[in-house]
Length: 140
Image (cartoon, rainbow, N blue to C red; front, side):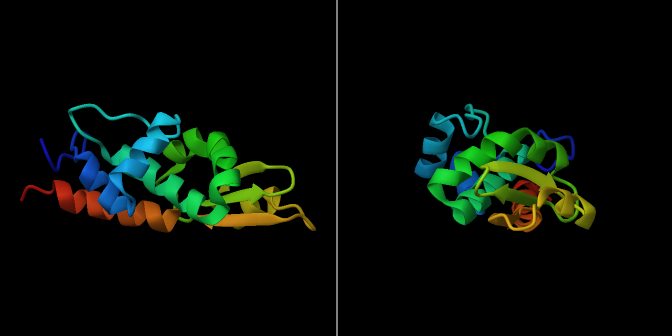
């Protein structure tokens, strides 16, 4: 039933793509490459929206070469840590390593001085897509 807090609320692929800021065909391309879960006839849950918005933020920031490398390393952790306040992806462009951080000490641990490093803020797009998902599935 839409609007339930147990994660059962679902939206269409078109709605999911729209709230993440991409086209449904791009979402399908990423799913076919194994970067996203493929949806069924039942639609997509909030976790799918979070995953899509995080991948889009990473793709936008790191580009088509480095983003898939980073995504493979953090995909599972994004799902586990999605509700942390200030979630940031740290990507070392030289070593091609990626990690997630939510606190300054975690960031300091992942950023090596003198290295080409990119930081991608994930908490903002995740928060926006979760809010939009909630509005779409609110049946009140």
